Image 1 (cartoon, helix red, strand yellow):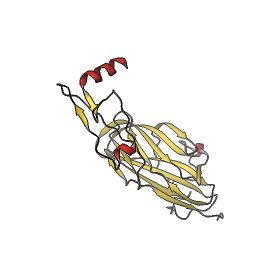
Image 2 (cartoon, one colour):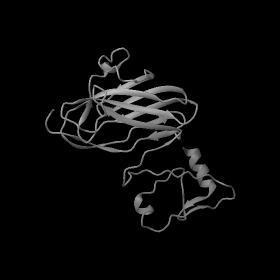
Image 3 (cartoon, rainbow, N blue to C red):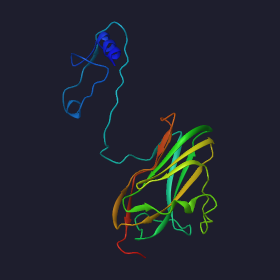
Image 4 (cartoon, helix red, strand yellow):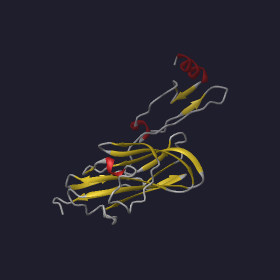
Length: 211
């Protein structure tokens, strides 16, 4: 840390005329609605400045991807598609996440599917290999090296090679009536994070009475 500080001071980089250390945080009051922030290199050599922005989007981000595409669907236990706006209390559903590489690639991937607040994961063991029972229609792939069935999300680690899609599935139950925000599902290359994809955000409505 001392070496970086000395190096930064010797480099002559200033922010609004004041010397800048190796790391400087600027809050939103200086970046939004105020005068422009002046970053100056007063030294004789070129220098590298890295800018990183953190924040919460005002509007939900659209589905997008770089290197991958990801889709999320819900089905009844019989395989019929489910409308997220018409879920009954205590209803059990199968969530299916499909990841499609955009080219032939080898990667270690993390797939994350957050849950809306009105749903929870139901008996993870039912969808392990060889235990699908009545879900014969489900063409999920047993490719996950590691899975986590958390209270607020499903997470899977997958080593994948090729350009063919793979599907992951888990079971949920509607436990709370109401209308809920459904965060986007996503996939990310663990070692090349620029290669990633996300679905749209969504809304889920759980009826206040079971069917």
